[in-house]
Image (cartoon, rainbow over all chains, first blue to last red):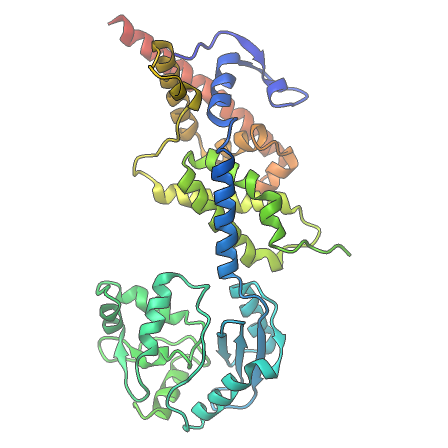
Length: 227
Length: 176
């Protein structure tokens, strides 16, 4: 076993100016365990993996625009190079930009051109002239589970509703109704991804975090003729 | 006004040392790999809020420390994996009794290190193997410099005590 008799200077080991003496064999053992590190190949591989993950995750430049007057308040849309990455309605511009920055790491720039199609479709939808959106979406920053929940919600057509439990079944995790509720509650692209079409299993409305909460949910469902 | 470096450059600048740190904290290469990725993703999200005068390196260490803590908690009671204890020992063919004994000793030390309070273990490794200054350790562990110093010394004091106990228990077993 480690012999604890011989003393060396711990302070020197720690490169401290003052300290206490430590048994030589303890510091030896620690060095044997930790000094060498993981090795060059493993390090290169780990760095490459981190770099790739970042690349996949990073939204790059994000552009936003606003539809100032709608029945649910001003609607903000942000788009990355991959597609629509965030929608908010009701907040101030500042609050929306803070949210985008928090979720994507990007400081969004106002650019109507990059959001023209999303804004046009949103206007048509809110005027009752559009049933479904046809837009690329950027869900890269979400976990696999959240992505699957949102993709399932995306498939509910206008005028219809589903329950949290149904969505949980559709993604093959029938016991995850509560987690489904959470994933829908933090839907980064509301309206376009119609989380408002998902209700509680007892037929009550469940929650809604966009705009004015459940009131807005009712409003959207009425607009779609589902209520 | 100082400009913060482009985030991507932080992988090249600090990736290797952070990986080594995470490897030392998790003692498992795949775990450390996952933690490194998670550390950079967390850092990426938080980067816009980082003060331009802040110490980037210490800030990354702080995120790595928290990431590893979460990871280890999750790994939790599922048996702690242990990296090859001492590659030198496995290289030379037949195990020599002395080497076996040495490996057992190292395993014992590793176990005791892993049983230290997380802050103390992190402080010890940050000081001795990552060679951070106490002020950087304080920033990484979100404590004062004095506390950082105390954590390092507490870790070593406990290691010595625990290993003494382990040794005397062993001696008694040998006598039986």
